[in-house]
Image (tube, rainbow, N blue to C red; front, side, top):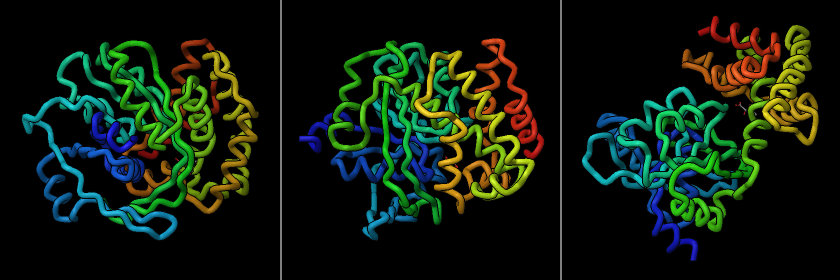
Length: 309
Ligand code: KPL
């Protein structure tokens, strides 16, 4: 009975962007009374004024979600299971009000672009049970509380390390049984594969202000694809992660599949928002330094995107 098991382990969702909203919808479908954690009273008013979240699925079916909402300082019990879908740079600040101690008795599942937030969360909350998820689902936001899901994709979830209370994992396993994700023993490989794609594509599309497909047409961008891919492969290998296909081939396949799209980083730069570059090429550079590997192409993309901000 996935529905009853899901109700026994209620989730709290932090971050109501396109992916956070989509997983609120999936939790609702699975029979979980997920609670949405919002930033402040203004966001709560906007949520109620919109009547909650509207998700339009690829098959045309519309789902209205009127989940309960909480804001920091409301005095309720501590959330035990948090699904975090904020932008990577916002993670610690978004989590802080909900994890006032060392994380004991709480589980955090990070579902985000980029890497580096797991290490940050672990350093700040040594007793939290920490999971990651990686998804290929695609969604976009028409308004803050109106989403369109364009691809169901595949989602994998895996434990980051062994710290924390293993009993909390039941919530992740019940969600897997309800079809939200597949549990994986090698989540780092999935995280690195997504990171590799984003490290090759996203920064370049922001720098050249182009669609993903145009990376193959703009000579200066095209020339950077292979060096970026080679560097990511070398750093991942030093972190004991081996890809089942060359990163350049992987990235080029995604470029073809998403040729007409603007990457998330291109959109962030166009809208004047903070980017996730520090958690994408920045993470590659950080791990490269730790291993003494030179990564000039990733360093150049990191610096160029910082200069755009
Ligand atoms: O994940 C993406 C992103 O934009 O963040 C890709 C796969 C590059 C699609 O645009």
